[in-house]
Image (cartoon, rainbow, N blue to C red):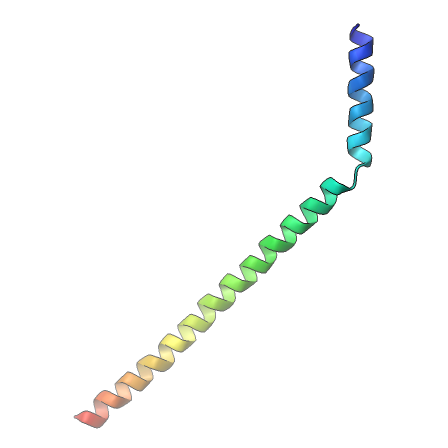
Length: 66
């Protein structure tokens, strides 16, 4: 009985090792994470630049009204 279970387990592991869908899912997950990191970095960078631009505009407007 134990040999039968070991044989079934071995076959399942070999089948799992040969299955490429798991690798594909992992690759897609890594790509999604990298895309999200780039998107967040871009949003933060641009957000800071836009904030600086608006602050300069506000400062100029305050200078003009004084």
